[in-house]
Image (tube, rainbow, N blue to C red; front, side, top):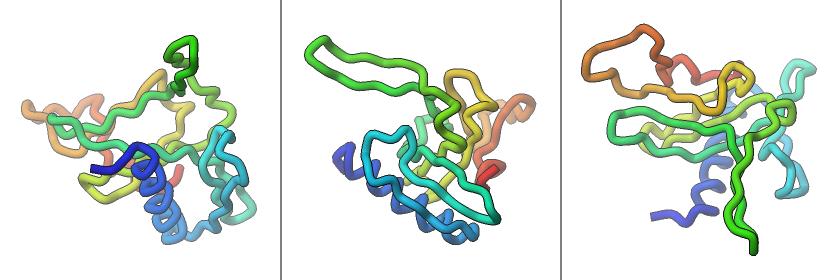
Length: 136
């Protein structure tokens, strides 16, 4: 079992390799307080990327919430992320050992990607993770 920080570090490393294989040059911010974990550059375009580590739930889907949380002496706080500060969310899933890329502007407060087919074989309105393997 990985510690939370180690999971995040693993996700960032996997994202770096995947982005490199897609032809991007990888840049890292010099602070942990930026709203993004990486910047990828290709063809004159910079892309700010927030990386998340997510396991599949028991039904075979990945859920990503576009919220940020922290705790302080006043308790735990959660607020929606400012989608203007991030261009792409990269979700690393250790169950598939793959990265999936989401444009947060295309979703509301969360996104659900299906890795395994639904039990009732529904496909309408289902977002399959395999369709999100490349940076948009």
